Length: 188
Image 1 (cartoon, rainbow, N blue to C red):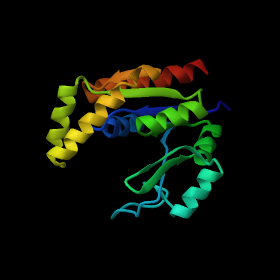
Image 2 (cartoon, helix red, strand yellow):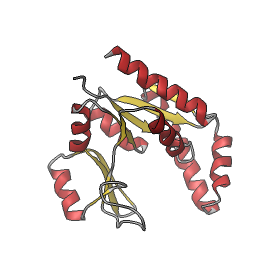
Image 3 (tube, rainbow, N blue to C red):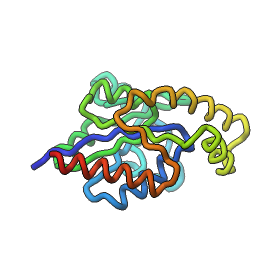
């Protein structure tokens, strides 16, 4: 049985990662999105093991000490991370796995798993990114400015990725990613 391949998928907020991945998962069989662990409380409707693995601070810190994470970070007083074991089990079963994580986490995974395929989803331009963030209508001017500042920093990491996919349209971005995955499968 062929072993699955690990894909690390990142890009700035507003680049369309969730939309692109949702469609990609619908179109490519045998492709799984990794579930992250967090210490924050579940939001209404979130289920343990589906949306996140919800664990205590003490349990998370124990797992850090055991080197159980491919990547982890603390953000706004809560830990977030990707547990290695569920990812490795899926890969061993022959499934391709996608990690949708932020840039710093992607760099951690790349250190531990240099065989991972690193994919950066970029907006067509900062102006388009700004328009998308404002178009959501969900955040204050201050939060949008912070997201744009973070995006500028994240975009500076593009050259560290194996593939840069510009999300000018969802269909185009999904097509590029689907071809990449299918080509990788054909080569194994």
